[in-house]
Length: 275
Length: 304
Image (cartoon, rainbow over all chains, first blue to last red; front, side, top):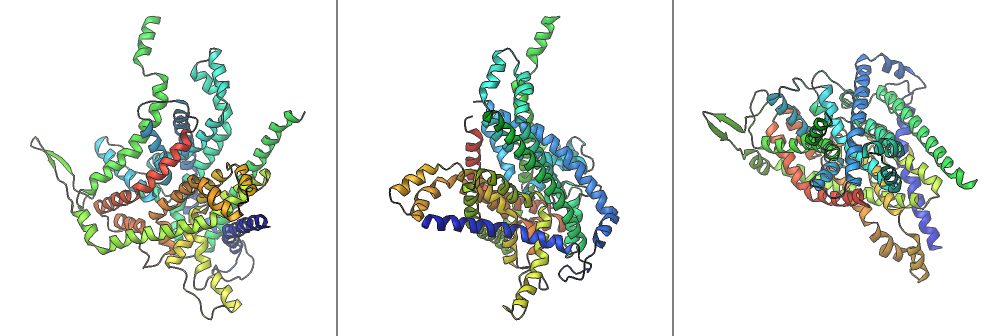
């Protein structure tokens, strides 16, 4: 009886917690279809704010800018993060190991204002010493995002690398494959799912970042969070609700596809056992 | 010819060094070096110029001049605003972390005990909001908490309150926003820890007559210590430096160091004071960061 009660308590908390997470988002979505300018008073159904959203040139160009930065940052972060994860899981003792592992884990928790400020000072010094970057913008945001995203990629990829059966890699090397070839033919295909989820995580993190980008950006590069922030600062606006709805929709679709795909992969893995 | 090639090859760094070197140099250049520069600029003084600070090192007439200005730190210590902001940040981050833990622990426990198929769905549901947009999730509360907001309207309609409660622009709203935004980061490490928990231990305890609550205090909780530390640090450390949430949900009496740093940097253009603020914040956070690092590197190096 007591056990039942306890399970019930944690299940109840789970349901309440999920409600807590989702009710504000559902409210956002509902009020994006409100015809009134006031976000809190319902005045009838309308898709007016969506039309307004697509007419906003400044916002659309910010979306394009953010998507490009996120794409480049995620791609670079996957390369760097995978290398770092490989070093951490496959190389045993070497000099600089503790330093590398602390430099990988620290960005996970570092307050954004500190990262942003420190990178800005770096870019200012670099401009003085080597003459690059002359003006800050997309390239500097790309470097900043790559740095903190690769930490997340390293965590995702290293947990997959640790699960792998080492004997397959060893067998390939015993059969004469170079470490390079073994990595590309054996290891890489096996960690591909982790690379994809790492890439997606890095992509959303980059797309979402306001603070670091605000520090290292210049007048030329305005990302989507900066536009949203300057509008939200002035108060609630149904246009932002419409934008939020579209973002939630896109993320839900990707998450559903990922879930569907993972389930199918799981079923496929089970099938040979059943036969 | 092959001789030349092999000679050339021996000059080149080995593959191992390259694999190690690329991420190492990148992080050295773009993560560690910047902190040294923040430290340097924190000893500079503000100047109306581009960039807006006095150089710390200068080389004039064959003499290296090092001018260290401790004024910024003395200024931080003497102005009660900054001390109050540090204290406020730590207090708000601590309360938020505690609330996250109290809500997140039972949730993670329930997920870890759910059927395997359901676990994946539940985890996706927990993570999904944090993949949308941080800003928009904070924004969602602006419409709910305002004086004319949904929550006040609802409570007025219920007749629980006679006049709107002031919830927006208070520390309550800031804590609520932090809990809302960071809850998934508390749940994930807790889940990862609790799912590995050997249930036979719990069964053994119950067979030996231990009551459920007793088993929880003596077995489940101590064994999930790693998850609690990781989750708490993932919430506490970023929350101390949080800028967006106090800016959007906080009021004039909400003093948090992330916001103060932002204002020093962007509004006052005082880079040296902003740098000094960052250095002191880092010193405050060094113990939590070390704790987190120790746990995380244990995770990274398992079987390694």
